[in-house]
Length: 479
Image 1 (cartoon, rainbow, N blue to C red):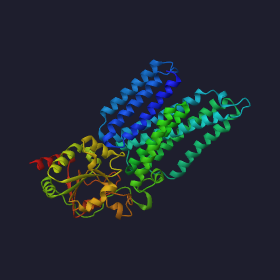
Image 2 (spheres, rainbow, N blue to C red; image 1 turned 90 degrees about the vertical axis):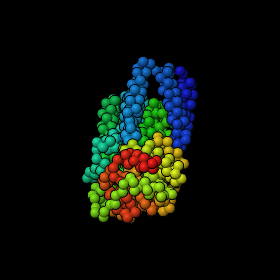
Image 3 (cartoon, one colour; image 1 turned 180 degrees about the horizontal axis):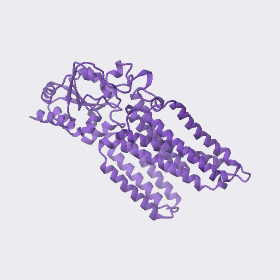
Image 4 (cartoon, helix red, strand yellow; image 1 turned 120 degrees about the vertical axis):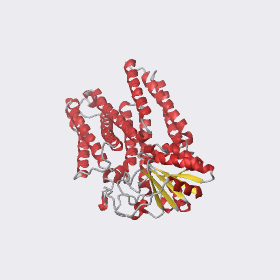
Protein backbone atom coordinates (compact mmCIF):
# COMPACT_ATOMS: atom_id res chain seq x y z
CA UNK A 1 0.00 0.00 0.00
CA UNK A 2 1.47 3.36 -1.05
CA UNK A 3 1.29 6.69 0.77
CA UNK A 4 -1.77 7.91 -1.13
CA UNK A 5 -3.77 4.76 -0.36
CA UNK A 6 -2.64 4.94 3.28
CA UNK A 7 -3.83 8.54 3.59
CA UNK A 8 -7.24 7.72 2.10
CA UNK A 9 -7.66 4.70 4.40
CA UNK A 10 -6.65 6.76 7.44
CA UNK A 11 -9.20 9.41 6.44
CA UNK A 12 -11.98 6.82 6.23
CA UNK A 13 -10.92 5.39 9.61
CA UNK A 14 -10.95 8.87 11.18
CA UNK A 15 -14.49 9.48 9.89
CA UNK A 16 -15.58 6.12 11.33
CA UNK A 17 -14.07 7.05 14.71
CA UNK A 18 -16.00 10.32 14.73
CA UNK A 19 -19.19 8.43 13.81
CA UNK A 20 -18.40 5.99 16.60
CA UNK A 21 -18.27 8.75 19.22
CA UNK A 22 -21.52 10.16 17.89
CA UNK A 23 -23.20 6.77 18.09
CA UNK A 24 -22.04 6.16 21.65
CA UNK A 25 -23.83 9.29 22.84
CA UNK A 26 -27.19 7.48 22.79
CA UNK A 27 -28.25 4.05 23.99
CA UNK A 28 -30.23 3.34 20.83
CA UNK A 29 -27.21 3.92 18.57
CA UNK A 30 -24.45 2.64 20.88
CA UNK A 31 -24.22 -0.73 19.13
CA UNK A 32 -23.78 0.94 15.75
CA UNK A 33 -21.21 3.30 17.26
CA UNK A 34 -19.17 0.36 18.55
CA UNK A 35 -19.35 -1.26 15.12
CA UNK A 36 -18.07 1.92 13.44
CA UNK A 37 -15.18 2.06 15.89
CA UNK A 38 -14.21 -1.58 15.29
CA UNK A 39 -14.31 -1.19 11.52
CA UNK A 40 -12.26 2.00 11.70
CA UNK A 41 -9.62 0.37 13.90
CA UNK A 42 -9.45 -2.69 11.65
CA UNK A 43 -8.89 -0.43 8.63
CA UNK A 44 -6.20 1.55 10.45
CA UNK A 45 -4.31 -1.53 11.60
CA UNK A 46 -4.61 -3.25 8.22
CA UNK A 47 -3.45 -0.19 6.28
CA UNK A 48 -0.45 0.25 8.57
CA UNK A 49 0.48 -3.42 8.44
CA UNK A 50 0.38 -3.59 4.64
CA UNK A 51 2.18 -0.29 4.07
CA UNK A 52 5.22 -0.42 1.84
CA UNK A 53 7.49 0.82 4.64
CA UNK A 54 6.71 -2.21 6.83
CA UNK A 55 9.70 -4.45 6.25
CA UNK A 56 8.76 -7.35 8.53
CA UNK A 57 5.13 -8.35 8.02
CA UNK A 58 5.49 -11.39 10.26
CA UNK A 59 6.71 -9.42 13.26
CA UNK A 60 3.90 -6.88 12.95
CA UNK A 61 1.29 -9.59 12.49
CA UNK A 62 2.59 -11.46 15.53
CA UNK A 63 2.40 -8.30 17.66
CA UNK A 64 -1.19 -7.69 16.55
CA UNK A 65 -2.15 -11.31 17.22
CA UNK A 66 -0.70 -11.24 20.74
CA UNK A 67 -2.43 -7.94 21.49
CA UNK A 68 -5.73 -9.23 20.13
CA UNK A 69 -5.54 -12.39 22.25
CA UNK A 70 -4.79 -10.39 25.39
CA UNK A 71 -7.63 -7.99 24.63
CA UNK A 72 -10.15 -10.76 23.98
CA UNK A 73 -9.12 -12.61 27.15
CA UNK A 74 -9.50 -9.46 29.25
CA UNK A 75 -12.84 -8.53 27.69
CA UNK A 76 -14.32 -12.01 28.18
CA UNK A 77 -13.23 -12.29 31.79
CA UNK A 78 -14.14 -8.81 33.00
CA UNK A 79 -17.36 -8.33 34.95
CA UNK A 80 -19.29 -5.07 35.01
CA UNK A 81 -17.95 -4.37 38.50
CA UNK A 82 -14.44 -4.70 37.08
CA UNK A 83 -15.02 -2.42 34.10
CA UNK A 84 -13.65 0.74 35.82
CA UNK A 85 -10.33 -0.86 36.69
CA UNK A 86 -10.08 -2.42 33.22
CA UNK A 87 -10.53 1.00 31.63
CA UNK A 88 -7.86 2.46 33.93
CA UNK A 89 -5.48 -0.38 33.03
CA UNK A 90 -6.04 0.18 29.31
CA UNK A 91 -5.20 3.86 29.78
CA UNK A 92 -1.87 2.78 31.28
CA UNK A 93 -1.09 0.82 28.09
CA UNK A 94 -1.57 3.98 26.01
CA UNK A 95 0.70 5.95 28.32
CA UNK A 96 3.42 3.31 28.23
CA UNK A 97 3.20 3.15 24.43
CA UNK A 98 3.69 6.92 24.20
CA UNK A 99 6.77 6.71 26.45
CA UNK A 100 8.32 3.92 24.39
CA UNK A 101 7.55 5.69 21.11
CA UNK A 102 9.11 8.88 22.46
CA UNK A 103 12.32 7.21 23.57
CA UNK A 104 12.66 5.11 20.42
CA UNK A 105 11.95 8.11 18.18
CA UNK A 106 14.56 10.10 20.06
CA UNK A 107 17.13 7.35 19.52
CA UNK A 108 16.14 6.85 15.89
CA UNK A 109 17.27 10.36 14.95
CA UNK A 110 21.01 10.74 14.55
CA UNK A 111 22.74 13.65 16.30
CA UNK A 112 23.49 15.28 12.98
CA UNK A 113 19.76 15.56 12.31
CA UNK A 114 19.31 17.79 15.36
CA UNK A 115 22.00 20.32 14.45
CA UNK A 116 22.92 22.60 11.60
CA UNK A 117 26.47 22.52 10.19
CA UNK A 118 27.49 25.40 12.46
CA UNK A 119 26.39 23.41 15.54
CA UNK A 120 23.17 25.28 16.30
CA UNK A 121 19.76 23.72 16.82
CA UNK A 122 17.55 23.61 13.72
CA UNK A 123 13.91 24.70 13.93
CA UNK A 124 12.68 21.29 12.79
CA UNK A 125 14.81 19.59 15.41
CA UNK A 126 13.40 21.80 18.16
CA UNK A 127 9.84 20.95 17.13
CA UNK A 128 10.69 17.26 17.09
CA UNK A 129 12.33 17.42 20.52
CA UNK A 130 9.25 19.22 21.88
CA UNK A 131 7.08 16.41 20.51
CA UNK A 132 9.30 13.84 22.24
CA UNK A 133 9.18 15.77 25.50
CA UNK A 134 5.37 16.10 25.50
CA UNK A 135 4.84 12.47 24.50
CA UNK A 136 7.16 11.08 27.16
CA UNK A 137 6.01 13.41 29.96
CA UNK A 138 2.26 12.98 29.39
CA UNK A 139 2.67 9.28 28.66
CA UNK A 140 4.63 8.65 31.85
CA UNK A 141 2.07 10.47 34.01
CA UNK A 142 -0.74 8.55 32.30
CA UNK A 143 1.07 5.22 32.70
CA UNK A 144 1.77 5.31 36.43
CA UNK A 145 -1.32 7.36 37.33
CA UNK A 146 -3.53 4.80 35.61
CA UNK A 147 -1.87 1.93 37.45
CA UNK A 148 -2.54 3.64 40.79
CA UNK A 149 -6.15 4.31 39.75
CA UNK A 150 -6.46 0.64 38.78
CA UNK A 151 -5.12 -0.44 42.18
CA UNK A 152 -7.50 1.88 44.04
CA UNK A 153 -10.52 0.79 42.02
CA UNK A 154 -9.56 -2.86 42.43
CA UNK A 155 -9.22 -2.44 46.19
CA UNK A 156 -5.49 -3.26 46.22
CA UNK A 157 -4.89 0.25 47.61
CA UNK A 158 -6.93 2.28 50.05
CA UNK A 159 -9.38 4.73 48.52
CA UNK A 160 -8.37 7.36 51.07
CA UNK A 161 -6.13 10.18 49.81
CA UNK A 162 -2.46 9.85 50.75
CA UNK A 163 -1.26 13.38 51.42
CA UNK A 164 2.49 13.72 51.83
CA UNK A 165 3.92 16.77 53.60
CA UNK A 166 4.72 19.49 51.09
CA UNK A 167 2.98 17.59 48.32
CA UNK A 168 2.48 20.69 46.18
CA UNK A 169 6.19 21.49 46.40
CA UNK A 170 6.98 17.93 45.35
CA UNK A 171 4.71 18.32 42.33
CA UNK A 172 6.34 21.65 41.51
CA UNK A 173 9.82 20.11 41.78
CA UNK A 174 8.83 17.37 39.31
CA UNK A 175 7.53 20.00 36.89
CA UNK A 176 10.76 21.98 37.23
CA UNK A 177 12.78 18.85 36.37
CA UNK A 178 10.66 18.29 33.27
CA UNK A 179 10.91 21.88 32.08
CA UNK A 180 14.62 21.90 32.89
CA UNK A 181 15.13 18.89 30.64
CA UNK A 182 13.28 20.64 27.82
CA UNK A 183 15.53 23.65 28.25
CA UNK A 184 18.54 21.36 28.13
CA UNK A 185 17.33 19.88 24.85
CA UNK A 186 16.87 23.32 23.33
CA UNK A 187 20.06 24.87 24.68
CA UNK A 188 22.47 22.53 26.41
CA UNK A 189 22.55 19.71 23.86
CA UNK A 190 22.96 22.01 20.91
CA UNK A 191 26.60 22.69 21.60
CA UNK A 192 27.89 19.21 20.86
CA UNK A 193 26.81 16.41 18.55
CA UNK A 194 27.47 13.81 21.23
CA UNK A 195 25.21 15.53 23.75
CA UNK A 196 22.00 14.42 22.12
CA UNK A 197 22.60 10.68 22.38
CA UNK A 198 24.86 10.85 25.41
CA UNK A 199 23.85 13.11 28.26
CA UNK A 200 20.59 13.89 26.43
CA UNK A 201 19.42 10.27 26.64
CA UNK A 202 20.42 10.00 30.28
CA UNK A 203 18.45 13.15 31.15
CA UNK A 204 15.49 11.89 29.10
CA UNK A 205 15.41 8.71 31.17
CA UNK A 206 15.71 10.74 34.38
CA UNK A 207 12.80 12.93 33.30
CA UNK A 208 10.80 9.80 32.46
CA UNK A 209 11.37 8.46 35.96
CA UNK A 210 10.46 11.77 37.61
CA UNK A 211 7.24 12.14 35.62
CA UNK A 212 6.36 8.53 36.43
CA UNK A 213 6.68 9.41 40.11
CA UNK A 214 4.60 12.54 39.50
CA UNK A 215 1.81 10.38 38.05
CA UNK A 216 1.90 8.16 41.14
CA UNK A 217 1.89 11.11 43.53
CA UNK A 218 -0.97 12.91 41.79
CA UNK A 219 -3.32 9.93 41.95
CA UNK A 220 -2.46 8.60 45.43
CA UNK A 221 -3.47 12.04 46.74
CA UNK A 222 -6.95 11.70 45.23
CA UNK A 223 -9.69 10.04 47.28
CA UNK A 224 -12.07 7.31 46.24
CA UNK A 225 -15.06 9.61 45.74
CA UNK A 226 -13.19 11.34 42.92
CA UNK A 227 -12.35 8.14 41.01
CA UNK A 228 -14.95 8.70 38.24
CA UNK A 229 -13.34 12.07 37.51
CA UNK A 230 -9.86 10.54 37.70
CA UNK A 231 -10.80 7.86 35.16
CA UNK A 232 -12.14 10.47 32.74
CA UNK A 233 -9.05 12.65 33.27
CA UNK A 234 -6.75 9.71 32.58
CA UNK A 235 -8.81 9.01 29.49
CA UNK A 236 -8.06 12.56 28.36
CA UNK A 237 -4.36 12.20 29.20
CA UNK A 238 -4.14 8.98 27.17
CA UNK A 239 -5.64 10.80 24.19
CA UNK A 240 -3.11 13.60 24.34
CA UNK A 241 -0.31 11.06 24.76
CA UNK A 242 -1.53 9.26 21.63
CA UNK A 243 -1.70 12.57 19.75
CA UNK A 244 1.87 13.36 20.79
CA UNK A 245 2.94 9.94 19.52
CA UNK A 246 1.18 10.76 16.25
CA UNK A 247 3.22 13.94 15.87
CA UNK A 248 6.43 12.05 16.60
CA UNK A 249 5.60 9.42 13.98
CA UNK A 250 4.06 11.89 11.51
CA UNK A 251 0.91 9.76 11.67
CA UNK A 252 -2.20 11.83 10.93
CA UNK A 253 -4.63 9.18 12.16
CA UNK A 254 -2.95 8.95 15.56
CA UNK A 255 -3.12 12.73 15.84
CA UNK A 256 -6.84 12.84 14.97
CA UNK A 257 -7.73 9.88 17.17
CA UNK A 258 -5.70 11.19 20.09
CA UNK A 259 -7.30 14.61 19.78
CA UNK A 260 -10.78 13.03 19.75
CA UNK A 261 -10.06 10.99 22.88
CA UNK A 262 -8.24 13.83 24.63
CA UNK A 263 -10.91 16.45 24.00
CA UNK A 264 -13.86 14.15 24.76
CA UNK A 265 -12.16 13.04 27.99
CA UNK A 266 -11.56 16.65 28.99
CA UNK A 267 -15.20 17.56 28.30
CA UNK A 268 -16.39 14.56 30.29
CA UNK A 269 -14.10 15.52 33.18
CA UNK A 270 -15.59 19.01 33.24
CA UNK A 271 -19.12 17.55 33.26
CA UNK A 272 -18.21 15.22 36.13
CA UNK A 273 -16.65 18.05 38.13
CA UNK A 274 -19.72 20.22 37.65
CA UNK A 275 -21.83 17.33 38.91
CA UNK A 276 -19.70 17.37 42.06
CA UNK A 277 -19.57 21.17 42.29
CA UNK A 278 -15.79 21.12 42.11
CA UNK A 279 -13.04 22.26 39.78
CA UNK A 280 -10.62 19.96 37.99
CA UNK A 281 -7.68 21.61 39.76
CA UNK A 282 -9.35 20.88 43.11
CA UNK A 283 -9.75 17.23 42.15
CA UNK A 284 -6.20 16.82 40.85
CA UNK A 285 -4.38 18.71 43.57
CA UNK A 286 -6.82 18.93 46.50
CA UNK A 287 -6.99 15.48 48.05
CA UNK A 288 -10.71 14.80 48.46
CA UNK A 289 -12.17 15.33 51.87
CA UNK A 290 -9.21 17.12 53.42
CA UNK A 291 -10.14 20.76 53.03
CA UNK A 292 -11.72 23.04 55.62
CA UNK A 293 -11.14 20.63 58.43
CA UNK A 294 -13.40 17.98 56.97
CA UNK A 295 -12.87 14.43 58.10
CA UNK A 296 -12.32 11.96 55.31
CA UNK A 297 -12.35 8.94 57.56
CA UNK A 298 -16.12 8.81 57.69
CA UNK A 299 -16.17 7.76 61.35
CA UNK A 300 -19.63 6.65 62.42
CA UNK A 301 -21.59 9.16 64.47
CA UNK A 302 -24.63 8.27 66.55
CA UNK A 303 -27.50 9.92 64.69
CA UNK A 304 -30.31 7.80 66.12
CA UNK A 305 -31.85 4.45 65.29
CA UNK A 306 -32.45 3.08 61.83
CA UNK A 307 -35.79 1.49 61.01
CA UNK A 308 -35.58 -1.84 59.23
CA UNK A 309 -38.14 -3.30 56.85
CA UNK A 310 -38.64 -6.64 55.19
CA UNK A 311 -39.68 -7.85 51.76
CA UNK A 312 -43.34 -8.39 52.71
CA UNK A 313 -43.80 -4.86 54.07
CA UNK A 314 -41.97 -3.32 51.14
CA UNK A 315 -44.11 -5.21 48.64
CA UNK A 316 -47.23 -3.86 50.36
CA UNK A 317 -45.89 -0.33 50.00
CA UNK A 318 -45.04 -0.87 46.35
CA UNK A 319 -48.54 -2.17 45.66
CA UNK A 320 -50.04 0.95 47.23
CA UNK A 321 -47.64 3.33 45.45
CA UNK A 322 -48.38 5.12 42.19
CA UNK A 323 -44.98 6.68 41.44
CA UNK A 324 -41.72 4.84 42.13
CA UNK A 325 -38.15 5.96 41.47
CA UNK A 326 -35.18 3.58 41.53
CA UNK A 327 -31.71 4.97 42.34
CA UNK A 328 -29.00 2.47 41.31
CA UNK A 329 -25.49 2.54 42.73
CA UNK A 330 -22.27 0.57 42.78
CA UNK A 331 -23.77 -1.92 45.24
CA UNK A 332 -26.24 -2.97 42.55
CA UNK A 333 -23.29 -3.72 40.26
CA UNK A 334 -21.51 -5.73 42.96
CA UNK A 335 -24.65 -7.80 43.59
CA UNK A 336 -25.27 -8.16 39.82
CA UNK A 337 -28.84 -7.14 40.48
CA UNK A 338 -29.53 -5.09 37.34
CA UNK A 339 -31.47 -7.87 35.59
CA UNK A 340 -33.77 -8.62 38.56
CA UNK A 341 -34.27 -4.86 39.01
CA UNK A 342 -35.48 -4.58 35.42
CA UNK A 343 -37.77 -7.59 35.95
CA UNK A 344 -39.18 -5.90 39.06
CA UNK A 345 -39.67 -2.72 37.05
CA UNK A 346 -41.61 -4.59 34.36
CA UNK A 347 -43.90 -6.21 36.95
CA UNK A 348 -44.59 -2.82 38.56
CA UNK A 349 -45.25 -1.15 35.21
CA UNK A 350 -47.60 -3.96 34.22
CA UNK A 351 -49.49 -3.22 37.43
CA UNK A 352 -49.99 0.38 36.29
CA UNK A 353 -47.22 1.99 38.34
CA UNK A 354 -45.03 4.83 37.10
CA UNK A 355 -41.41 3.66 37.44
CA UNK A 356 -38.32 5.69 36.56
CA UNK A 357 -34.59 5.46 37.22
CA UNK A 358 -32.57 8.35 38.65
CA UNK A 359 -28.92 8.48 37.58
CA UNK A 360 -26.25 10.61 39.20
CA UNK A 361 -23.30 11.49 36.91
CA UNK A 362 -20.74 10.02 39.33
CA UNK A 363 -22.72 6.94 40.38
CA UNK A 364 -20.43 3.91 40.35
CA UNK A 365 -16.70 4.16 39.75
CA UNK A 366 -16.70 5.05 36.09
CA UNK A 367 -18.51 7.81 34.15
CA UNK A 368 -21.76 6.32 32.90
CA UNK A 369 -21.28 3.12 34.92
CA UNK A 370 -24.94 2.88 35.94
CA UNK A 371 -26.17 3.75 32.45
CA UNK A 372 -24.16 0.84 31.05
CA UNK A 373 -25.46 -1.55 33.71
CA UNK A 374 -29.09 -0.64 32.99
CA UNK A 375 -28.54 -0.81 29.23
CA UNK A 376 -27.03 -4.28 29.69
CA UNK A 377 -30.26 -5.36 31.45
CA UNK A 378 -32.38 -3.89 28.66
CA UNK A 379 -33.84 -0.93 30.55
CA UNK A 380 -35.24 1.54 27.97
CA UNK A 381 -33.47 4.87 28.07
CA UNK A 382 -36.67 6.92 28.14
CA UNK A 383 -37.25 5.99 31.80
CA UNK A 384 -33.64 6.66 32.82
CA UNK A 385 -33.37 10.29 33.89
CA UNK A 386 -30.37 12.39 34.89
CA UNK A 387 -30.13 14.15 38.25
CA UNK A 388 -31.11 17.62 37.01
CA UNK A 389 -34.20 16.21 35.27
CA UNK A 390 -35.60 14.13 38.13
CA UNK A 391 -34.75 15.95 41.37
CA UNK A 392 -37.93 18.00 41.19
CA UNK A 393 -40.01 14.78 40.98
CA UNK A 394 -39.02 13.36 44.36
CA UNK A 395 -41.60 15.29 46.44
CA UNK A 396 -44.39 13.71 44.34
CA UNK A 397 -42.87 10.22 44.58
CA UNK A 398 -44.41 7.56 46.81
CA UNK A 399 -41.44 5.18 47.11
CA UNK A 400 -37.75 5.60 46.23
CA UNK A 401 -35.70 2.42 46.09
CA UNK A 402 -32.01 3.19 46.68
CA UNK A 403 -30.21 0.06 45.52
CA UNK A 404 -26.58 0.05 46.52
CA UNK A 405 -26.12 3.84 46.38
CA UNK A 406 -24.80 5.95 49.23
CA UNK A 407 -22.93 9.19 48.63
CA UNK A 408 -25.15 10.31 45.73
CA UNK A 409 -28.24 10.43 48.00
CA UNK A 410 -26.51 11.91 51.05
CA UNK A 411 -28.38 14.96 52.43
CA UNK A 412 -25.20 15.95 54.25
CA UNK A 413 -23.94 17.27 50.93
CA UNK A 414 -26.43 20.12 51.38
CA UNK A 415 -26.57 20.51 55.17
CA UNK A 416 -23.25 19.47 56.73
CA UNK A 417 -20.50 21.99 56.07
CA UNK A 418 -17.93 19.66 57.68
CA UNK A 419 -18.74 16.84 55.28
CA UNK A 420 -16.10 16.14 52.61
CA UNK A 421 -18.89 15.99 50.01
CA UNK A 422 -20.50 19.27 51.10
CA UNK A 423 -21.60 21.28 48.05
CA UNK A 424 -21.80 18.25 45.79
CA UNK A 425 -25.17 18.14 43.98
CA UNK A 426 -27.00 14.95 44.94
CA UNK A 427 -30.23 13.13 44.23
CA UNK A 428 -32.72 14.51 46.78
CA UNK A 429 -34.35 11.17 47.48
CA UNK A 430 -35.19 12.12 51.07
CA UNK A 431 -37.95 14.43 49.80
CA UNK A 432 -40.05 11.41 48.77
CA UNK A 433 -42.82 10.04 50.97
CA UNK A 434 -40.81 6.87 51.56
CA UNK A 435 -37.23 5.88 50.86
CA UNK A 436 -35.97 2.31 51.13
CA UNK A 437 -32.21 1.74 51.11
CA UNK A 438 -30.89 -1.66 50.05
CA UNK A 439 -27.57 -2.32 51.80
CA UNK A 440 -25.55 -5.20 53.15
CA UNK A 441 -24.59 -3.24 56.27
CA UNK A 442 -24.35 0.25 57.71
CA UNK A 443 -20.88 0.76 56.21
CA UNK A 444 -20.11 4.18 54.74
CA UNK A 445 -19.88 4.79 50.99
CA UNK A 446 -16.81 5.16 48.81
CA UNK A 447 -16.29 8.73 50.00
CA UNK A 448 -15.93 7.37 53.54
CA UNK A 449 -18.78 9.41 55.07
CA UNK A 450 -21.91 8.33 56.90
CA UNK A 451 -25.29 9.03 55.33
CA UNK A 452 -27.87 10.83 57.55
CA UNK A 453 -30.61 9.57 55.21
CA UNK A 454 -30.45 6.20 56.94
CA UNK A 455 -31.79 7.78 60.13
CA UNK A 456 -34.65 9.81 58.62
CA UNK A 457 -38.15 8.97 59.87
CA UNK A 458 -39.39 8.31 56.33
CA UNK A 459 -36.52 5.94 55.51
CA UNK A 460 -36.42 2.17 55.85
CA UNK A 461 -33.38 -0.09 55.59
CA UNK A 462 -33.57 -3.44 53.79
CA UNK A 463 -30.40 -5.29 54.71
CA UNK A 464 -29.01 -8.16 52.69
CA UNK A 465 -27.77 -9.01 49.22
CA UNK A 466 -29.50 -6.71 46.71
CA UNK A 467 -30.06 -9.43 44.10
CA UNK A 468 -31.64 -11.83 46.58
CA UNK A 469 -33.80 -9.02 47.98
CA UNK A 470 -35.03 -7.93 44.55
CA UNK A 471 -35.66 -11.56 43.50
CA UNK A 472 -37.78 -12.01 46.61
CA UNK A 473 -39.69 -8.80 45.85
CA UNK A 474 -40.40 -9.98 42.30
CA UNK A 475 -41.65 -13.31 43.63
CA UNK A 476 -43.99 -11.59 46.09
CA UNK A 477 -45.28 -9.15 43.49
CA UNK A 478 -46.03 -11.93 41.03
CA UNK A 479 -47.85 -13.96 43.67
